[in-house]
Image (cartoon, rainbow, N blue to C red; front, side):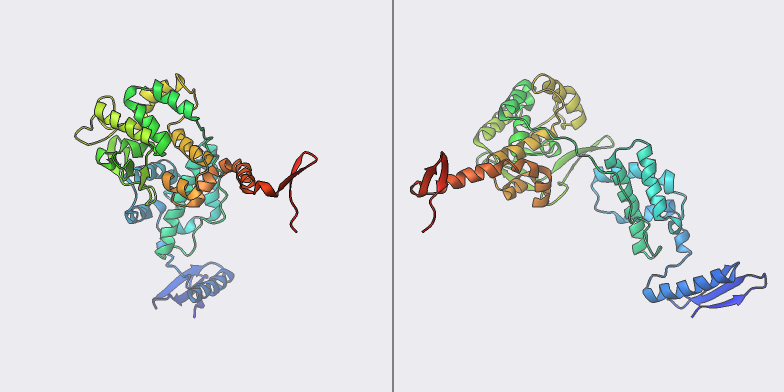
Length: 372
């Protein structure tokens, strides 16, 4: 049990043993504060919530390298983004703060600070998640007894409006863009692949005889370096059946622009890896302006693919698998609003299935025969 004694200087000292049996002491100016601490420390020991107060004095910047070293499975692009957000936003605000001194009010103030700086809701949320992860690791390491990242109000992430092209509009765009990228546009719209997945597509992942495309890598640019890595999730690694016309388009593309030494199906104008920024500025935007008009992102071709599948009545599970979503909930959350118009079509199919001999018309309204 903790006990309190008077010090020579007129203050009060609480002496107690930590869970490991080591004797510790803490001084207070007022007896009431010493008594309060005495009760609290014993309660924390019973609840298993006691933490070494000396550890809680470690600053955020001092703990950061330890936390970063534990994040071993990050994709290079994710790690680069995290380091940028930590360097530019988190450390300037929290770097000198002791881990044990940060409160939920401080974290909420950090969120408000980022909003005042004009950062997007998405960036604010990403910064918060980094802070939450850092304090969660400190909690798991028994440095603090409770994370300050609780009950935090975050800005709503307004979703970017999606654009869905018709089949004719896809054809118009594919006809206007540089001939080298006609098959790229058609594959995005009729296979639903992401830009990085197509830029990282290698010829041996195409089986034109079986009309399949396997998504196994994605190309990205991190700090000026081109990287080829597995997709973000296991679900994103998938095999897609291709329409016959698209198989013919890809065969024609490969005959005209054979894969180079690296084996990429789609390459830059100079034959190197296809980089998003250069492609968007030099090729994509001019073609969009000359055909379907802005705004139009390359990713909207992927949304167009989902819309086509929904319009033709495909099962959501099929759509999930083709899109490479981690769960059917992601599919329905993203494209659920497109399913609304299918209910009437379902009712019409049910109507067509009912035997004509069991129908009758009354007052111009088709009515079912009552059962007898």
